[in-house]
Length: 468
Image 1 (tube, helix red, strand yellow):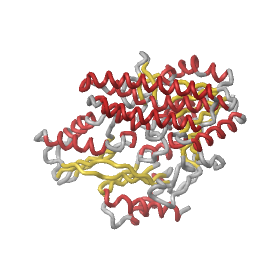
Image 2: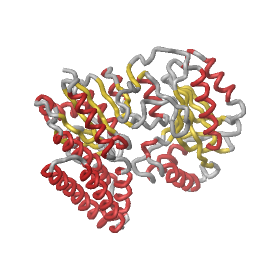
Image 3: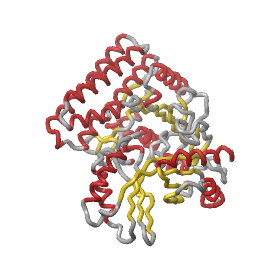
Image 4: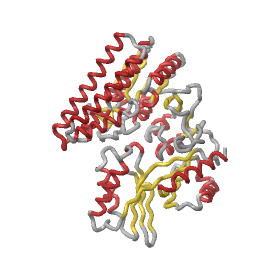
């Protein structure tokens, strides 16, 4: 049977106009496909608010977390009251929202009482509430428009390991749970609205899949229900040649290969979660990125072959990072221990070593901080890293600085060195701290100083546009 999994991002469900668009899309696609599965993100900004509330609870600041929860309640109820819902449906939804938020307040109260002993596992138990709220609103709106629908929490579907803040699904166990709890709904022509971002261990302990994890949820569900396609609905026309907030001339890319899309996500494209491509590639399930406000546009299709066109740059991305360097050569083994300790200072974050190099007089290591770590992770990790470097005589000579990774994306970069040469020629007046061609042969990454990042983006994007 033809099955479509559609994920709606926070920016595509946060207003009555956006939800009207979602309703129109779902009603239309329900006529085109045998089975529909919807995945809901939290409304834009809600997860950040919940994380802040959890941190305030950790510090015992009752007034702070209660204020955030009250604001979230007001926001969701105001949205509900603007929707064309019947009296009974609206009242039931109000009660459901209040129950979820009151339960969460109880968890925050418990966290505040033990304060310094609060674990990341406890935080995971609270920050997925945004998805639960959104899923219930969408399901109610669909029911009001004569489409059988139910909100379904992925704590009963997605089985993960117990890594707090960045759990990994167990596909086989998840497949069993989906067969028991989701597939019967599809067989009864019910449209499930599934919560993104959250899961649970085999023992039932709540987990989360990392920032932007609703994409990953859609990917895993798609594999487990043998989806024909997966669509990600957002507020842009697809994967773009650059971030349109930085490059006005950025345009949608018609097709990408799995490798190109994965590299774009890893190196900073915020449209996709970094881990969602892997399951789709293994099962060869096409992915499409579409604009909820312009559903008639085809968006970006991501599949095994992409466009098949070589010798053409597809996109330019950027992502912040940190570098540690020393005016010396020799032993670097203490550095991994330093960044391991630094990451512990920023819950639910991580660092990836992208490049390291030595010369006769210098040593350098560059670390990427994923977008899923949050906007404040760079600052937190840098402070922790500087403290840890100074704590050991082996690393006191090392210094930390902020850097930017700028990555050019296209398939088969290993087969055409002239493009690399052209990029370097265009940047001949820019100081490049390090350069690396990715092992997937779909990316060329340059490490530059923050002050040069904007110019590097602009120059390489000009090459993309001029080459068509």
